[in-house]
Structure formats: structure tokens, C-alpha cells
Amino acid sequence: MYIGLDLGTSGLKGILIGEDQAVIAEASAPLTVQRPAEGWSEQAPSDWISAAETVFDKLSRNGLGAVRGIGLSGHMHGATLLDAADEVLRPCILWNDTRSHAEAAGLDGDPMFRRLTGNIVFPGFTAPKLVWVRKHEPGLWDRVAKVLLPKDYLRLWLTGEHVSEMSDAAGTSWLDTARRDWSDDLLRATGLDRSHMPGLVEGSEVSGTLREALSARWGLPKGVVVAGGGGDNAASGVGVGVVRAGEAFVSLGTSGVLFAANDGYRPDPATAVHTFCHALPDTWHQMGVILAATDALNWYAALVGADAAKLTGELGALHPPGKTVFLPYLGGERTPLNSASVRGAFTGLEHATDRQAGTRAVLEGVTFAIRDCRDALAATGTRLEHLLAVGGGSRSDYWLRLIATALDCPVQLPVAGDFGGAFGAARLGLMAATGAGAGIATLPKIARVIEPDAALKDAFDAGHARFRAAQTAIKDL
Image (tube, rainbow, N blue to C red; front, side, top):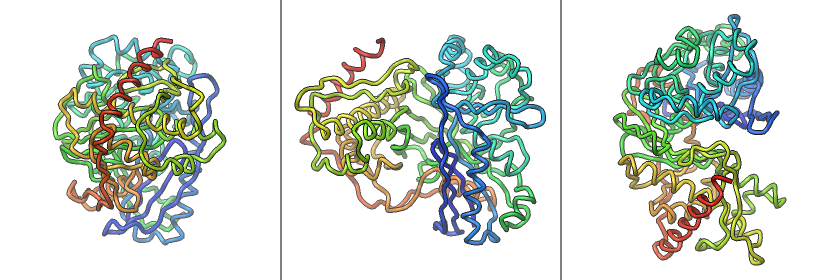
């Protein structure tokens, strides 16, 4: 058996699979985010350990004596700062924290960063967070001995090793993404060196073995290997089988992601597309990322005092976009705006805007933001023939029809099952334990395909044009 652990923003999920990759058991534990100041987003790493203990407690009810490998997935970019004794120095600064926007702009002004990383230095990335700490928390800065990404702090607890892997490391602004190695020049530019960084392995390689105390606690055999794993989206790519050029998925989770696998390195930072290493050797991927997908829907549901699933379930047939436009920038935006300061808005509100019209506008706004990502990927030469839909938002049939029509691209819905980060992490654990390659990362069986509604194509093109006009009007407010 093989275990995959996925450290998400709102919870940690564990999945147990067999040699045939069939799911044997799942378990989860909730997590919360602290926002002590505007634009700040933090978590206590000790909460991740507590959540992992809860997940192992639950999974162990199935008997874990046949486990041979563990894989890790997690939210990217987080700055987990440790002293020389591996004690955590402060709460982890998360991916959706925008406090270091000025520091990010400063680093991005140095052409070396885009040239070596293939990406804009976004405020959510790890390097500008460390520059912020150096400036605002100098006493703490002097004690920093290691910088770990969130899932790699779990690895430290599991194995005692300081290790990361290529896909997560590519989101730090310290990795030479073409060479798949830390850049001494980029580290030096932020006051760090290799001694502050974890070692690097590929996501399907062994990063260490499970500590004997943990093996004994939950009944695992000695010598269980822990794979390098992957950043959450790269691991999801492995889980859903998007590991070869021409394959792509759209993820409707807390954030929204348009993800395409590539067999070569094709960066274009000016588009605000992320070009990262994949979790498998000699493979890269591109992502357009929006910061609020289901997060925007859940915000609206709380605002109107209703359940999100109920709101989407009452919409019926696909409607053409109305006059009401929603801009989903609740905490800034990445692709294509690269703005920490832009904020969301409703425009075109009128007497006829009822709750359902508001729900449709929110779903349309997130979808049009994903269409912006599609256009950004297209600018690099990446074309999408079809999309696999994953994430919690993919349970909304209305949303899937909306995406298919607005992007003019068939959307494939996998058969019931979990093909996200935890499943991808378990696959990587299997690869590390057995030496299997990318061939085991097969595409899931497709339950159905949602085709674009050709009769509404022009209406959605016009709706996207209104969205872009509203975006232009509010982005500098």
C-alpha cells in the first residue's frame, strides 16, 4: 500500500491506495488560516503536524503493515523559517499573503530573476517573503538557519531530513528552473546561500525514510520511503494523469488553476503564466493561477446567507451573461494582472439583480478570470484541445457548462473518485518505492464530456469583453 498526504490551506488530506492504485481509505483534518493584518495570511506549522497525526490515526484503522511508500503534496510558496535546532521561528507566511508586494517588485526589477526562474517574482512567492522578514523582523532574520516549504516541514517531521523537490522549489524565485537546481546568484541577491536551502530530489525519487518512532506508532514497517512529492498543482497533475505534453486540467479549488504539461521549458514571464518544473523528471508545466475560485463562491454564499452548493444547484439551464459583472479579486490577483492591491467588485448592479443573478455573476467572473489564464497560456504557444475538471467546484454542473462555453473547449469530468493532490502524492510514493515511471500516471476514466454551447458563444465573448472593460476600470482604484 501507499499513502499520499496533501497539505491544503483549509485541511490536510490523506489517502491510502493499493498496488492497483485503487483507493482503500481516505482521512482528513481541518486547518485554519490566521490573518493578523490586512494582506497577511499565516498558519502555525505545529497545526500541520497535529493534522497529520489525526490523519495517520484514522488511516491506521485499516492496518498499515503493507505500506511501502509515502508521497507528499502541499500548498506552495509558504515560508517556514527554522533555527539551527529546527525550531519554528514564526508562523508560516502562506501563498496568499501579499505583505511582501514591494519586496517582490524590487526583486522583479532585477532581470536576473525572470531570466533564471522563468517567472515574475510574485508577492506570494517565497523569496520576497524572506526579504520582508530581513527588513521588518531583523532579530528573527539573524536566527534563520533553514527555509522550508510547507509540505517539506511535514517531511522533516516524517524523516528528519531537510529536502524539497523541483516543482515546489520552482515557486520560490530561487530555482534555476531550466537547470532544476538552486541558483547561488538568486540566493545571494536575497541574503541567503545554499546552506539555508533543503536538498533537492525529483518528485518521484526517494527523499528519506520514515522515522522508526512513527513507524512503530502507527504500525508501518521499517524503511518506508518518502518520495519527493510535489507542489499541490503538480501533484494534482500526477493524480489526474496530466504529465505529458498536450494534456491539461482546470482546478476549481480555493484558488483556480489552468494547468498544462510540457515536455520542454518554455517560459514567458511577461504573460504572468507560471512556468515550473513538474513533479516528474525532464518535465515542466505551465499554470495560469487565480487566487479566488471556490473561495469567491464561498464568500458570496456567506454574504447572502446561503449554502454554496444550494446556490449553484438552483441555477437551472445555462444563461447568457447578464449586465452584472463580478471581478473575483478578493485578495489581489496573479494571472494576468500580477497585482497584490487590486480588489474585487460588482458592476452593473440593477433592480433585476436577484440572488440567482448574483450567483451567476460570481461563477462567470471566476470563469472569465480562467479565460484570461487560457489567453495567457495561448500567448506562449500552448493550445488546449480539452480540459479535465477537478476540485470541489467541478461538482457544479452549471459551472462546468459555463467553463466549456466561455473557453470554447470541451470539459471532461472524470468518474467519481479523488484525482487531486493526495492521490498524485500516493502515486509518487508508489514510484519512489518501486521505481515505476510516469507510465503509471494514467488519465482517469471519463464519466462524461461537457461540450460548449455554440448558441451562447457570442454572448459569452461579449460577456468576457465587459469583464475585461470592468477589470481595466477598477484595477488601479
